[in-house]
Image (cartoon, rainbow, N blue to C red; front, side):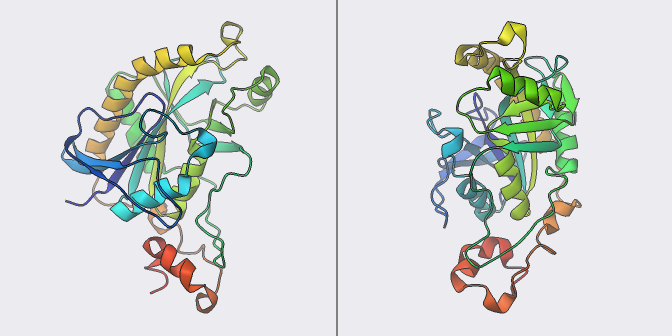
Length: 286
């Protein structure tokens, strides 16, 4: 049975307890090494690959993550859909700690992160108006509600650089813009998954109110970890439920994201670029 579903576990979600028939697979990519080995196993009757985003023992900063290697590794394993989980701060009163928000938009506040597979003589521009897979996001939301989570559908995830938390001025600014939650990791994953024609959705696990809230003006790791531990079991059950609900066939546009995106004429694409990106481009450059 091929691996078609990937799971990225963020802060606090370092394993999937229900995963059986486990084996670790170490993957090498043209872009370097992923965060660690992929744990491949069976979940709700389907083969999945789990990756701890920050590595074993949580040792990789958000700015240090090799997003390209992580997503490329999933592509090599045959993954067509990725469910991600990540800790976020809430920018609105109604999104309480321990809630789950399923974002449908992103705002980029990072600096210089590599978030494309292209370049080096090969140019492509994907459509990214809708940066997550609507079908997979709906499945994730339904599954989270089914296990009793308080779920919010849609919203904008501000992707900050970190590793520091926001200043009060920044937090107030994002609120004035109408942003919903803030985190440090998901936007680059979403961009690269789209380029790899992999469906992507995320469960944003609210851990705190960010520093704008008078009761949360000094966000601490201790506060966040305490809430993460409570959220982790809910997230595991929600993701497992989502895996069980995912249909075999894809009908969303994610699967053909590159069809109209490659601009470079085929005859001038460098051979090395063709080789490195063969898993992404084989059906277009045959």
